[in-house]
Length: 229
Image 1 (cartoon, rainbow, N blue to C red):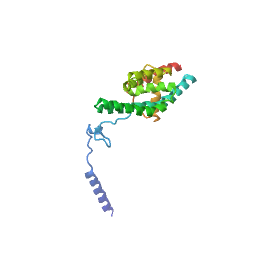
Image 2: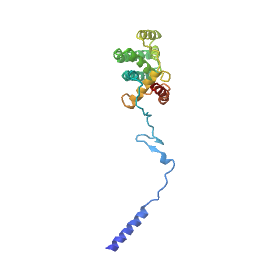
Image 3: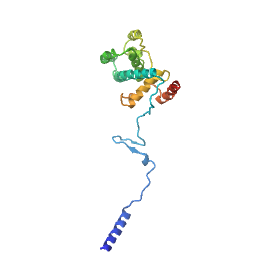
Image 4: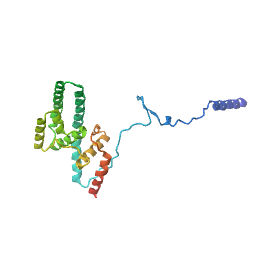
């Protein structure tokens, strides 16, 4: 019985020895390739969304802190309108390109204008002056065009003039641009947006303007630190 057991062990060891395949080194190209489910293209890397790690908010005094949180509340409130405006503008431009006849393009544009006005007007009437100005800045952030030029393009220059004049009565400039590189408040608005995107509080929509948030943070963050000292 013991002899049969030893024979069985020897046969098993022999079988395992035969069945082993010598490990082959992976091809230097193959080992770097990644197959993503649902994608027919073999990749060497996986594209990930850019994320930022945020430090804890610090303020030199209560007044500055209160001002920031008021700005954050208003920015988060009006951002969806700016995002929607950008989406509608892209839809309008994409559709107009496909319409060859000038008369039909004009008719379609008026139809879209009325739709946008019906969609926005009642809600926009509820905005405060500062919320309206932030919205104007964010429209420029999302579209690369000032609210004044958008009105001028979609309407007549005369209509844009009256829109601008009316806005001035309420101290709102439709020509205001979003400039986080040169205006500290605009940087704070961008910081608020980036934090809200990361926290999934707002749906991310990339700005069409050419600036880098990390660079802005290095610039204005240093300024904030000097203020705190």
